[in-house]
Image (cartoon, rainbow, N blue to C red; front, side, top):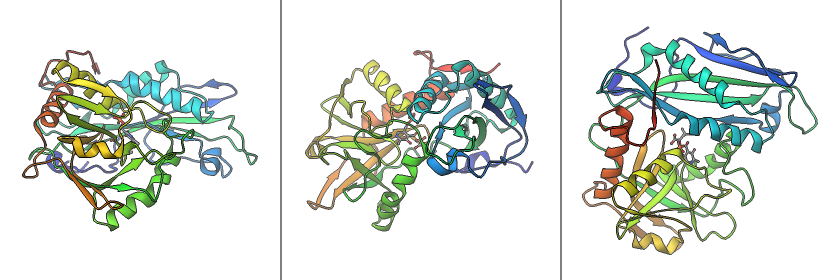
Length: 340
Ligand code: PLP
Ligand code: COI
């Protein structure tokens, strides 16, 4: 292995030593297997590549301050993958199997877990997909569950960098009663034109509005949205179009513990003018502060940062969550599981 430059990792694929795999066949899950291959041998009629029977998850493990490796809130990812699997009629992965696979793949790739102090972490990517052959549109009879891992880059040493977003009205990520709350690949394919448009227009990301009325904030790119005003953390309520973010769930708990009020409700576009801070949250970046939101329809610019710096509540929330994940802060909510 080449030496890994832990301080300068990005968020990209890196080959590690092993992945773990399990096949569902004849109505049951088989034995967990260890593989050193980056490839799969897939039937040309597998439902995943024809009809989108595919789900994934994303979670992280850290080398904590005491030198132990811990994983953040893995049960929530296991439960969400189960929910997604049922949502697109795949064989769900039992939570116990998810756990066994997760612990095994982390242990097998221990040398890729970034050291404490680098800010980097081990990104864990579970995938579940239909491998059984069908040409009629129906659920497969066979599924494959794989977990692979890779080291990914730091929460930035220079702090977190606020970005510009625009309000997208040309594309929807998810239909009102569709698959938006499931973590299925199709939602990400559906978002690609919007992301490309955002980049072309010079924005880092975008705000997806609710597809039905185009009145309310749904998500901020591939992350949940929150706004802060009057010592209140406000985030869109759980819906069929929004992915129920585990980071957001955790920020809600931290916000309450720091004395913020929390509201989970619809956020009308007009309300964006009233927030003093705003952010996007997800596993990859934890919090990406929103610097500005531009509404091209009304030519309005909403601003949330002074001197390009995240606001005080955003900074506190971020520091607390990242502190818990890296073991700098006590795990007061019981979110970290040690990999022994
Ligand atoms: N929303 C979408 C569409 C996402 O892809 C993600 C990333 O996983 C999130 C929100 C954030 O979810 P989590 O905090 O569980 O990573
Ligand atoms: C996140 O983890 O925040 C994401 O948005 C996941 C993305 C890489 C699909």
